[in-house]
Each structure stands twice: as C-alpha cells, then as structure tokens.
Image (cartoon, rainbow, N blue to C red; front, side, top):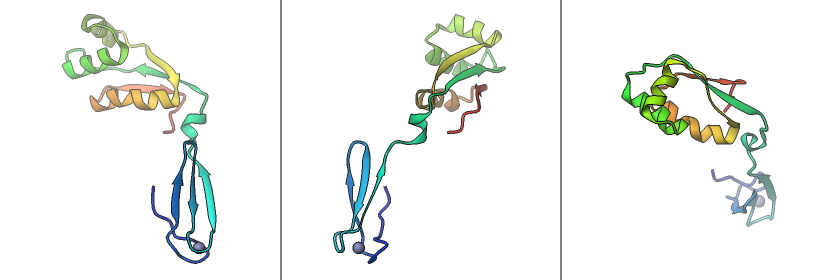
Length: 117
Ligand SMILES: [Zn+2]
C-alpha cells in the first residue's frame, strides 16, 4: 500500500487497515478517506472455463503441470493432452491462483469467457 499525502495540508497520512477496508487519516488536520479492499475479481460471479489447447504430450513439464492442475495421473494426463477438453470451471479468484501453475510451464490453453485479470 503506497503512502499518501493529505490533500488538505500535505502531511503524510496514517494508514489504518481493517479486514475489509483501508482508511487514510491525516494526523495533522484530521482529514480522512476510506476504501474497501474488495477487488472486482472477488465480486465476479462468472464461471470461467479453462479449455486445453494443443500441447506437446512428450513435454514432461507440461504433463507434470497438467497432472497437478487436474489431479489426474500421468497416463490420463497424456490422454488429455491428446484429446484436449475443458479442464477446469470456476470463479475468477479461484482460477486466478490456479492458472499460475499452467502459466509457469507455458501450457497452451484458453479461458472462456475472456479472463480480464
Ligand atoms: Zn491534513
């Protein structure tokens, strides 16, 4: 969280963090601002689908990443790579974390609808 200066008097404001909000308060003049920490990704109720695209079924890194992602064993994962299908459905914030595993190993996939995060 960046430091902010009071727009009224230029004094550096104190940050007060709570579970669902952040407030800035100026210790000099008492000016205050509050914001919620709820980011749009947590409000997004869309269900996103991850669709596997063409991948190299001999690339052990891709097999490992997909096996971890799907929970399938290596043989079934290789089947999956040869017959790509939807491998995940979930909400934006879940997918945001999960997809890192795929991105780290350059797995080719597509998300529908378009994933804006
Ligand atoms: Zn102030």
